[in-house]
Image (cartoon, rainbow, N blue to C red; front, top):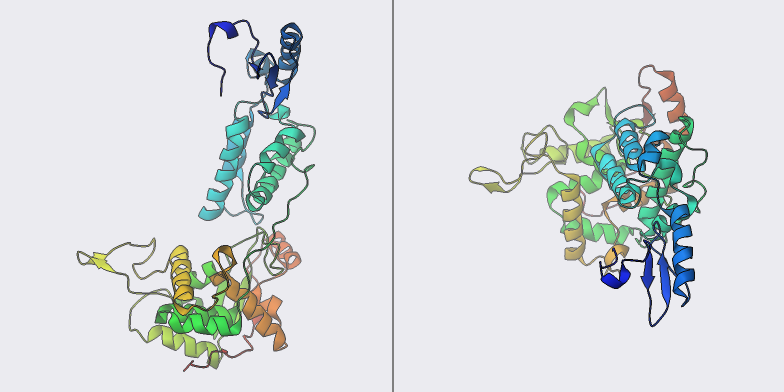
Length: 378
């Protein structure tokens, strides 16, 4: 916030403020931190002018003559050209998250020459946001400055020099008893989604995007889309996607049959009949009116959690989500002596090799290997 334009302040240089009594204080033009400057006005004014010469961003004609590019300009260009590691365009959700990170940074450094963004500034920004957000923002900034270095625009990477924060995981894992209670309180379509997640270990986005056309040659083909940096899930892949071909055994087939038992014609395996308004679906998804949205799945799952009172001692972020079914499923598969990693997705090394080859997709053939553990499954 700028200093009020009072007559008594007209002779003060920028960023010098009156403190309590006869004291003076200087506001760092980049970090916003105030520092005491004593009670001698002349000394405070001289010090403020020197600090301004050093710290005030060079966003004027000098920067233009030197050919400097501002952080905002480069960040926008970086985001426009950013791709996944396999060269594909970013998923909508990933682009939204990255955009939010960039906009947060632009609030601080939009008109600042890129080379003037330093370690102190990056640390200050990362310290002001939650740890979970800070991790993603730091990763994106590290990549941004790596690209800037490769173009000769900067000499070092201030983001990569910062210390990575670690998030204390609050969300608890599902217990078999808890998930059984939740499933009993869920609508039939949600029960089917839970069953498929348990059998296949797939993520939420892959569950809702499974189509009947993905089933052929006796397999359910899953081209995994969701990527994550979840440090608590060793089976997740950063910026990649696995290609898993799941053999349809009797257990999987039983779930697929239940998915068709509502006689609702839909291209999606997990589907529902939405509420109608004026004879039409209230909210029409992108592809088909029976499609289940990711957020809707999570919302309905949470409703079932509350209805079942499966975890009465857990509150807020501690309550396990639909995604946590994946962890329980992997545990069940490993307990049964099955290859949980192969079912969950390729390793990073295999994905790197596949993407580098540039040839046809190599599906990873896997068997489910377990039966649904819910007592009331028919």
